[in-house]
Length: 219
Image 1 (cartoon, rainbow, N blue to C red):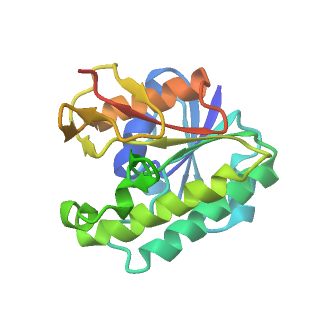
Image 2 (image 1 turned 90 degrees about the vertical axis):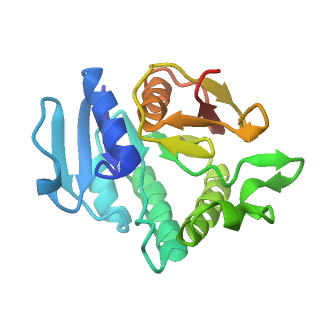
Image 3 (image 1 turned 90 degrees about the horizontal axis):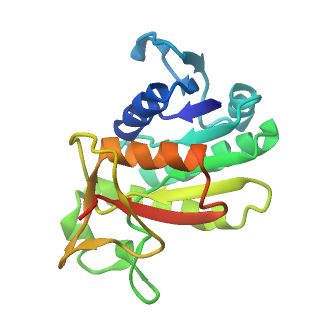
């Protein structure tokens, strides 16, 4: 299976790359600078601009699936606009390439904490995350809204839980739908390595076509 990976040098993307290669899948990483990824068996690197739909289409064509862990960077001053600009370019580029399968790694902010209430819209959300993260959380929510209207791609949107940590891989996780997963009275978390396991599992054995789901560590 041949997978195109966008965002392979980021926090989530690095874990996804490691997990995919561990499963002996062939991965093409779309990057701005090929020197940021060391050569590995099964890995091809391609220079491509995630904000350019034509460049994305050229780079991902011929693959079985595309995984997007795109993020402009939490310190990007125009984070909201650039997040949506890149997300839209990736979606349009994958469409133009002829590849049908797209998995997007989004944020927890669009998960529901009560009927009709998303985490990002709660009054205490800005006080629980760094101020520079808030625009990205809102942009990821809006990118999901746009993706829901796509009837061409076999898309999946995966929201991590509220807490994402650089812990060890256990290989296990529990699955949720549209609601924020909890551990007792606190928001649940997961290691980035186990999030990558869930991403790879969904690519190899799709279960959430044209749907959003979330995961968290097993209790």
